[in-house]
Image (cartoon, rainbow, N blue to C red; front, side, top):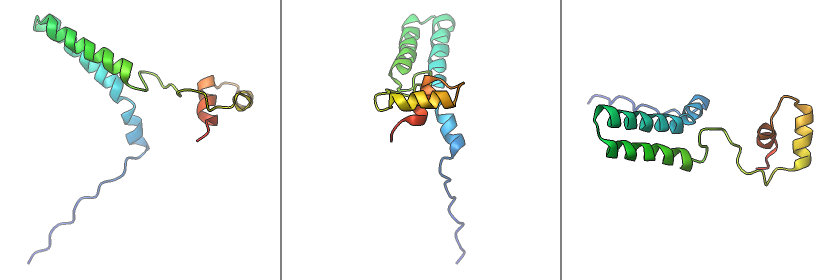
Length: 104
């Protein structure tokens, strides 16, 4: 009998995989916009263009991160901690302070 080759191992998603994931919503929005333009001008199909553009708008509106990197609601962040963080890190934004001080 011959030995079977070892099964390939699946590496866990590292930091670069997480970085790539954040571009998925932007890529989908761009894809739907390009499809809408192609459908409208090249295929002369305004109905398909409208559906594609609507999908792009829905992705933009419904994806939690949207196009930006919003930290989410700051309800669990202590204002005193935010103020202290901003004093210690003068170039930081409020969103940076919320991310850094958010209670987990």
